[in-house]
Length: 200
Image (cartoon, rainbow, N blue to C red; front, side, top):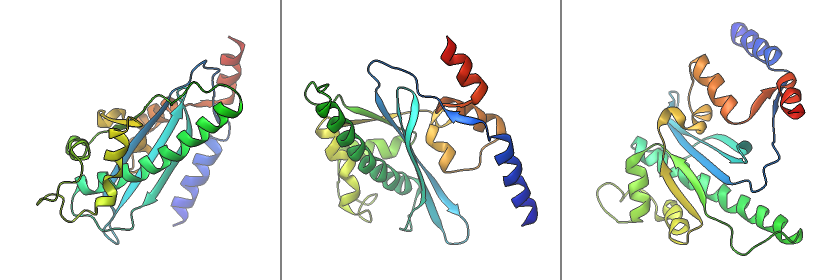
């Protein structure tokens, strides 16, 4: 395992000056990205959930966690991932609304939050809601919580190409070029670049 440790140390040394850059955006939008790594742990047949939320284009919340339930398909794994993403979304929206209200910035109900997902079948099932059938009878109804949020216009789950799904960072190993592109998209900048952008 020594080679893996050395690789981690090299990565840390090469990214020690990386920062998240938060821009001064007048009306920052809250957007989410959800993904699942189907059976990403070969040792115990468990999948992985990954999500992140951005505000004004920079990441404010993220998570990568092993799913505790054994899933039967990639679609099943994505439904669980969207469930966790939706729960985080509810909390973030309540925090943002509280801040806006205490600062006198609230103008009624928040605009809906777009959550991007790359699995078409999962998006379709969650829009239809829980229907007990051959494809969903093994999935607990509580995991269709996302459907209720969409019906209430709190969130809108939209399809995104897998290559543009920022949550891919948290569910699978990526080629270096793709990894660097995604960390730039979530707001990571080198310190010297942050200073240059701040001077503009």
